[in-house]
Image 1 (cartoon, rainbow, N blue to C red):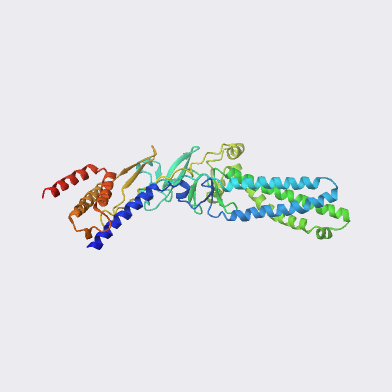
Image 2 (image 1 turned 180 degrees about the vertical axis):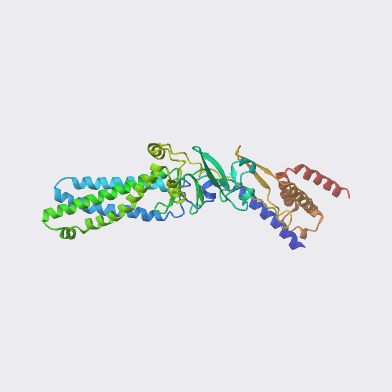
Length: 426
């Protein structure tokens, strides 16, 4: 009996201590409780994809050849032309490389246009009459009986948008869920492993500037390496093979940039085509708008203006803000070994506030548990060995605090007075 009483009292004290520690802990930030697969740096100021390590390889593929080029080729050009061309070539290559690295950071280290997740599925009455189940045999539904698609009008054309079970929302037009980052991204283009990030509405422009600038850098390095080889051939009156032996670094860099320019140059050309027709990579491979009318195509000039000159929208996520709890995680040991169901939490999305409502069955359970725990207050008449390490006053204080949290302080105090009067007048 004594062991059971001590265990119950210890369980009560541990539960209250955990609740107090949870209340005293600093609030978590959004990036700390982020449900996607992203990796954050600098306290949520930089957001990367889960494959951010590939960014290191990309940086090395850019920086190392430029360092070798700036250290060798400009010096040979200066010796051959007897002027300051070597210093000018080295300076331009280094400055342009820094510019490319900044574009790479702006592409990979910012929110690409992530659509915030819903805390719960949308209500059926919020869907409207535009939902469409005809494409889903057997009347398949999404969460909570929601239709898997609905129709929206874009520039006079009807476009189907799908329901995302992970984010619990209907994706906006041109939005898609990235399986790598586990987020819905606005105007999703593709997930680029070379930059370790999704390419979407907020970083597509920087991605295009990055690949096009890398193309120009490859052409720059290739051109001056060729000039250096040609100068060696003129100076020593030799053929190409002998000139390559005199400057093998120039030959290696020419081969490297020739291969690289096909990759970044081809990528630049492909995306210029996509911009001219106002498509994304995902749409081009999935929907093939060239075989039917593209509802987003506004003409060549307007397509380029929309993609390259329009204002980049602000992020819809404040990763450094305090995170809102989805539900109240609460456990109590007042039931002496039985765990209470957590109070239900509802979120008012319009007002941005939270209200806590304890279900009727949970409140009845709490009433019965507190009533059964009141008998602990009579332990003052019991022998000291039944009390254990904790006094009755501390147990009563814990019960009173619990009752006050659920608005039952009045009933608890009144019952306590009645039982004290009964003990005084046997």
